[in-house]
Length: 207
Image 1 (tube, rainbow, N blue to C red):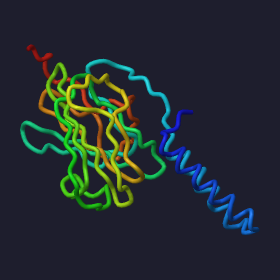
Image 2: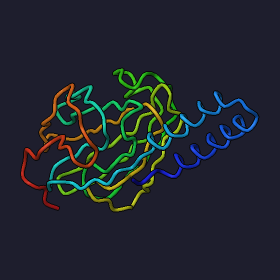
Image 3: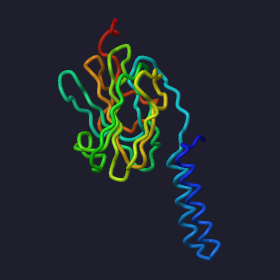
Image 4: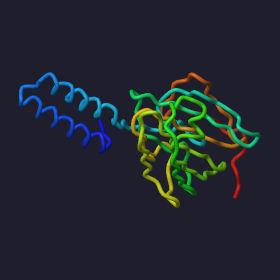
């Protein structure tokens, strides 16, 4: 299975530290570092995903839906909480062109809380697709201290394409307009690039 490069670096460093402790007969400490190294490889796993449909909004993250909320008549938000056992690689919810990438510093509240959508460190990716724009917001959690985004303004992305990742516990919000209808509920388990979050509720936009 593919592993994010950071996970390999962390695992290698922890394994070396474990080896040093083992060399000096502190094998019980060394074992702890070996376990941490193995967990890093597990945490940063990056399985292949293939979208199963067209013209829908896919989940950009693995995890559990913690909120489906209509912010205004023009905007709905679906929030997904990722625990430390979920895959943390994020994927594009739709195909289109990246029109905005905005990073903002913030707090590190527990990512499952409602306030995390507004107050936590976050990176916002705006994708303009055939049916309008969809916003994907990577949000750091209580443990996470770094958000990685691979994409830049002007890039074209395909639905399910890797767009970045968040280290350790985190949250991803997806915001979209009335041209989409949510098909998930609070408590649902979702997978990045394969679970459908919303279906079209209006005809395709014409340019």
